[in-house]
Length: 330
Ligand code: PMV
Image 1: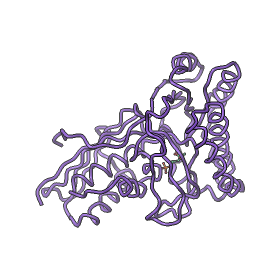
Image 2: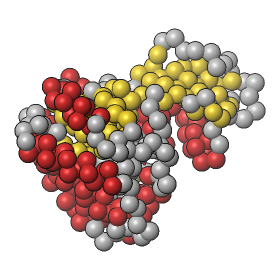
Image 3: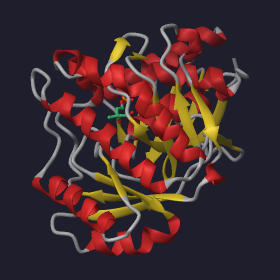
Image 4: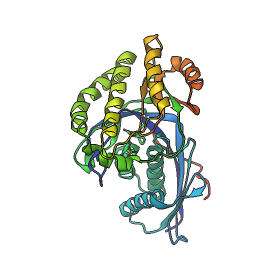
């Protein structure tokens, strides 16, 4: 086989209705449906080249050679693509994040979305978006929501074939912003793969899963009708439900720092004073402040001067993962 190369750019996503826990951890079939928005400003760009001269896969993430589980997860994903395309050639993978990895900013979602699309194109596979999303899910669950664009729904279903993300509304449906307060940019202690495995040890997980469909419907309605107060109410509730499960798992996962709680309280106070802003938090201490674009400058300036905030990143709603025509040489 000749060398084949492709580059893809994928954006991270922030879940408005969270995915936490798997009904099948190997296939990454989620315990509940989730809904997210892609984040245009937080991207991973990945080049994959299948090369006949390589004896092993070579993986570089942010200019450093990947080792341990990060390396093994990429190789396992390349193996999935090789199995589908019937090729045996090893690959070189060069991946670059434009935001700090391991901060609860879902770098695995943009990473596996970009890796899936780049590897499939490089391998000569021509897959539809649903298929690419399904494949990305095997690398990291939430990556399936970064393959299509805009506001994305990942329906819980108990089979591999029907578990993928679909666009519910395109990026231009509602000009929302995610103003992310980075409270700590160090790598998190417990990653989401291990975290999902603990979800069922919390007595609250069954209740969270059982009540997710109602929150999902409210979130969909709020998004489709661009009703910010309704959106704020449901996304905050859903994030708190997930963190209640995390905190009460065995062992307990407590991702929050004092500044996380201080900001949660501040966001509620700002909203009470008339500023349209709501919080959501992933598996980390950082607070994602969701607001309409018009409110973003004020939200940003409030957050910038907030004690304990290291850095602020703002993103609009992102498009699907796409290939770049001009793939750099590795
Ligand atoms: O895709 P994973 O395994 O990194 O899990 C993501 C989990 C959360 O970010 C906490 C929630 C979500 O739905 O994105």
